[in-house]
Image (tube, rainbow, N blue to C red):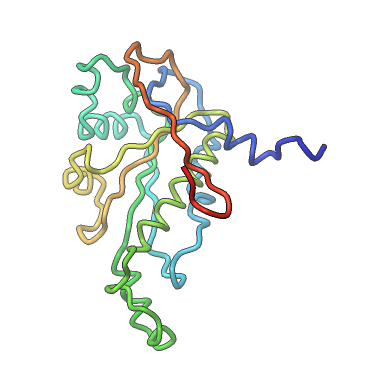
Length: 200
């Protein structure tokens, strides 16, 4: 028993980024609840500056696919991905919430948010992203992620009525895994876990 994987360990071991989904008419009502739990993250000073926007209407998914340059992705030989998603989860950062929180009296002796070496809103957003992916995996689907540098962020924000002051980190997709693209990527393996001291 001691050597058996826990449920979470098994979930993590089998999770992978998938960027090729098949079209389906099957519905997964559980996808609506994903953001209710994905947002259960620690935020610096309990600033609560991370938010989600769930997109499930096919017409909006197709619009996002276009603004995320899916066509150029397909022209390179990859399979359709975004437009075949069952749900898309936009991860939004309200940086002002962090600055407002760290201007309050109980934070006067803390390192102020404008002086952080690491902007913790990105740390918190990453935690939300991982929660989202694991919740999708738990449903029995696969997830992918596209960063905002690969999409027309300003147009997406305008389309989805997202306040200009918010940052769009990117979005997580959910779908049924299809056949992998014939394009292979050779990623060299390297040591990324260390014990006690850093060693190569």
